[in-house]
Length: 296
Image (cartoon, rainbow, N blue to C red; front, side, top):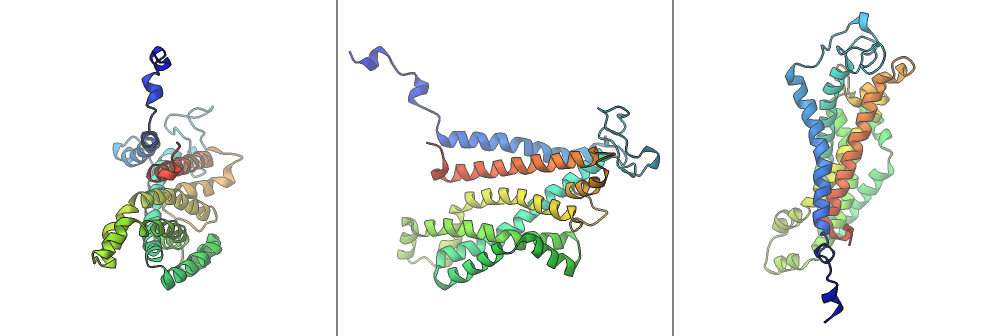
């Protein structure tokens, strides 16, 4: 009788959980709070439970409910104009999430297209696009933003233009590297030998194999877009009034830190937690779609 028969290995030790299952679990638990936050900022305004957004100069700088002097009429307090912070917070959250999603789309679209063209066709196409990528990455985003906003003015379309011009290069570099690897696979060589056109190979076969990488990059770009908008709003170059984002709330509350610190605290915490969760989700998606990054 062998030793393994006397001391059998438990089933859990013989069949450990696969890395793919762990990555899917991470993606689920990181997506859940993001879905909850997005659902709250979208649903709460429709319930009629939020306080009025109007100004009340008799109730300026009221503290939140959990502090002395706070009331349930304003759960997160009021600002220097007597406006309810919770109502502004929810309304600003909708705009911040919209900016993150649209900012990711306008950056990931041209970035993916240029990256695929550079990685697949190589040659002079790759050289030209690589020079453009290096030139864009060498420019600080704040200089690009200042040049565009000072010329075109501050508005949402201009902000999306800034996010597109400052975000496409990173996406292009990553998709170019992934396309170079896919280009050398056997199924691409077989398609060329079978007489398939280059356009068919790129759009019907290469791009679908990049879907996981593109989704992960887009998720990471959402957090980047939110941080860029917050930085621009902090400098007075972001969302123009009367629109409000978490970044503009943070900027308006910086002068009230000594008297009404809660005006800047809640949007600051929201930006930090949202960007952290989005970046962790993007990293989990990259791990899930890239077997080389999975733990063995």
